[in-house]
Length: 148
Image (cartoon, rainbow, N blue to C red; front, side, top):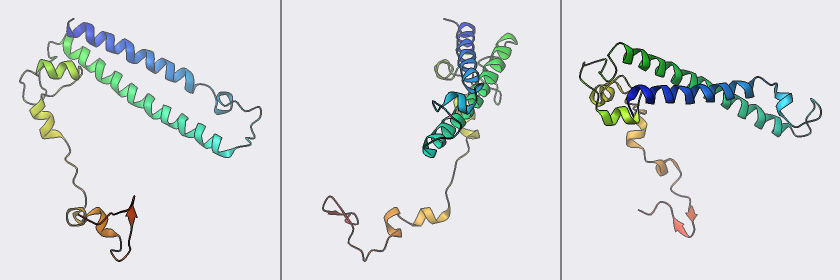
C-alpha cells in the first residue's frame, strides 16, 4: 500500500470520527441526559455529563488538528515534498512514516525541536518522601515507607 492510499484512508477515518463527534455534540446537554426534567435529582450526574461533554469537545478539537495535518501531508505529497524533512531536507525514515504518517520532521530534527521539560530546581534535590515529617511512623502493609 502506498503513502497516498494510507493518507487518504486515514483522512476518511478522521473525517468519520469528526462527523460522529459533531453529531453527538449538536444535541443539548438536557437532550443527552436521561432526565425527565431540567432539574436533576443528582447534581453529580450533571457534573459527570458536563465533564464528558467537555472532554468530547477537546477530543473533537484534537481530531480537527489531526485532519489539518493530514491535509497538509496530502498537499506535500502532491508537491513531491512528502517524506522530506522540513528542517534539514533529508528523507524521513520509512519506518517513522509508517508510525506517523503525517510527520514533517525526521527523527533527529524532531528530537532537536522537542521541548525538554525541566521541573523546578526543588525537584532535583528533594525526594518525594522527604516532604513528610520523618518523626511519624507511617507504614503500608506493615512496612515503613522510609526504609531504603
